[in-house]
Structures are given as C-alpha cells and as structure tokens.
View 1 (cartoon, rainbow, N blue to C red):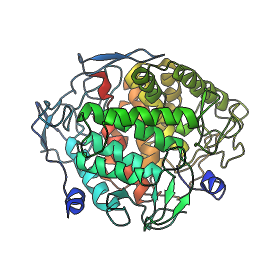
View 2: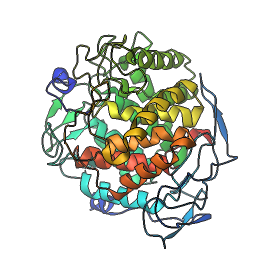
View 3: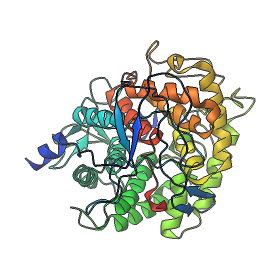
View 4: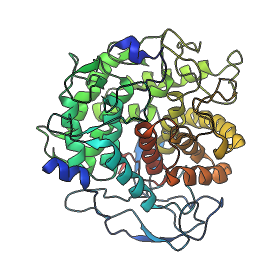
Length: 463
C-alpha cells in the first residue's frame, strides 16, 4: 500500500546474527549456460525458453518453463562482461538457487540481460533498506527520508511483502525468516499484519491489513516451501503458514466471494484498487488449497479492468487504470485518487504475470494497451503520473521512476514487437537511477522488475 495522497486509504483506514544476516549476500552459485554481452543498444530480445515443467492453474492455460536464452546484444553494462546463465542446479539446501533464468515460452526477455545487474540491485536494496533496529529482534524493511508522506524509518506491510519476495528469489533464507517473524509481531485481530508500524516498533500507526501486501506474502511463502521446504527457523512449515495466510485473505479480504478488496477492514465494490489484483497468484492459491472459488475472483479482476477502461474515462486504448475506482470503473470511488499514479503503475506487472505464467488472454489484451502507450512515449520520457487520458501529471517532473518504467517493461514482455522498448526499460532499471518516488519504493521495484525480466521471478510450484 502506498500513501501518496492526502485522500489515500492510508489515512482513511487509520488502519550479532541479525547483523550478519543484513550484511551478507548469498554467494553466486555456479550455473550452466554462458552468456557473453556484445555491446550496448536496443537490439532484439533473447531467445525464448523451451521445455521445462508445466502447470495448469485453475481458470488458466498451462505455463511452460524453460532455459534462458543465451547470447544477444547487451542492453546495459560493460561489453566485456561474461556471465553464466541458469538454471542453476539444486543444492542440498535449495531447489532453485539464484540464478534460474527460466524463461516463459510465451514471453520475451531483454537481450543480454545480466544476473549481475540483479545481484547489484539486490545488494543495494538490502544495504539501504533492511535493518534490525526497531525490529523486535528480527529484521524489517524501512522507509527512508526520500520516501514521502509516512514517518521516516517506518515500516509498511507492503515493504515486508516485497522483502519476502526478493529474499525467496535471491535464495536468502535467513532474511526471509526474520522478515516473516517481524510480520508476526504486528498482527491484527484477523491474523493479518497491521499495515503501518513506527520506526521504533512501539506503535501501530495504521491498523488493518493491506491486501496487496498480504497476497504477496502468501505467494512468497508458497515459493519458500518449494525453494527450501520444511520450516527454516519458523515454528511451522512454510506450506502450512502459506495455506493459513491464504485462508485469512479469503475470509477477510475477499468481498462477496468475488472481489479482492483493499484490506481486511476496508474496501467493497465502491472503492477498488486495481493494482492490488494478482490473478496469477489466485490461480496458484486455488491449486494449493483446492478452492475453486478463486476463479470468481479472477473473473472480477478482468471485469473490473474492462469496466475501468472506457470512452468516458478516455482510457479505453491506453490501459491507464485509475488508482481507485468503483467496480463499475468510476474513477476515485470513495477512497482516493482516480488517476494513474504510484499505485496504478504496478498493474502491468501483476497482470503481465498472468500472461507469462498462465497464458491468460485477457491479461495479454490488457498489457497490449499499456505497452503500446508507454513504448510510444519512450522510456526516458515516462512520467511518474498520468491523467487517465494519457496527459502527463508528474509528481516529480523531470525525474524517472522505476515503479513506472519497470512494470511497463514487464508488461511489454508479452510481444517481441516491443523488444526495443523492453531493452531500453531494462537498461534504465539496471542503471539504478530511477528514484523519483523515494528509495524504498523505487529500489523495491527495481529489484522486482529485474527479477522478472531475467527469468528469476517464477512460480516454483510449476516445476
């Protein structure tokens, strides 16, 4: 959950070993396929993977895994760099050591992408944001002085969720476990994390769960079960904890058994945040729990997106969904801003996963629109805010945002036509300078976007 506006639900809701864990970065394991960069520039996209295991998600087509493509033209970094590509073989302690580079057969990837770019972004993210201070003996992700609206050094559940995702894909089990233990320290009556905690860990500044964070946590826990198995240093198995988290989301954050609402204490058909929708997750939640009602939630995702893109909003062809709207697509709803901003910008990422992982054609239709819009603008000119008709309304004029560029690039992975734009987005993200919205948010979306663009943000349950 972002708090970018005075009208945000952030206000409406009111809602030794650790030092080592912070300072250390998992060693780069040996990999199998060598990739050599060959200069910089736009180029095409890398070869798409073949083979691999498949999974049929409820309500979706099967997803094909595979090897990462090799060679190609490097879109960011030194021409002399030579790297090895995954999939890295399983070890005694992890089934999917970084890097994996398992490319979906239906998506395209930046040419010459580099695992070293991901490692560098991860190391910086961890050094800048992960702290043991105020973490009740564990670890947390903190906001910095550059992050707007909320208190300096505070933690939001969204940040813990991003940290869990990053940790499981970077094979950092100590970080994962300590972030989850911090999360468990600040549960509300429904067993979900209160969304906003003070820097010293003494005060719950915002009460109630935030659905985007809670579902990211559930997804990360499912991946942790496949990555490491067992329970690590937790008191219960990752899979059991994941199933409990999914059930709590269903019980308290799914409205009328159809709508993923904003949180466990807030949200209904009149105040919907489309950027919270994660249909790819819901397919796996259904598979793991056997609960086919998640298919109805997926239907609501795409119905709501269709409703929000219309002639009245002047966004029918550009994919710019409002930050908040009614389920009928009326911008703003009763919650907050109705433009395309620091919440909305995540939508191409979350919806793009549903095409890459499961071949959902409604997801493809959506990212076709955002890809056409943003590629026409060009990476260097993407603003951090738009009216729904596509008019730039930047919060930070002249500054680039990884949270806007990264997800737009991930959305563009659906079609090789957008290869040059994807390469440019990757290069801009990998450079690590798109910090318009603040270090916490932008560095988080830098790492998440790079993970996806390099075939390292995966559904491990498919393998």
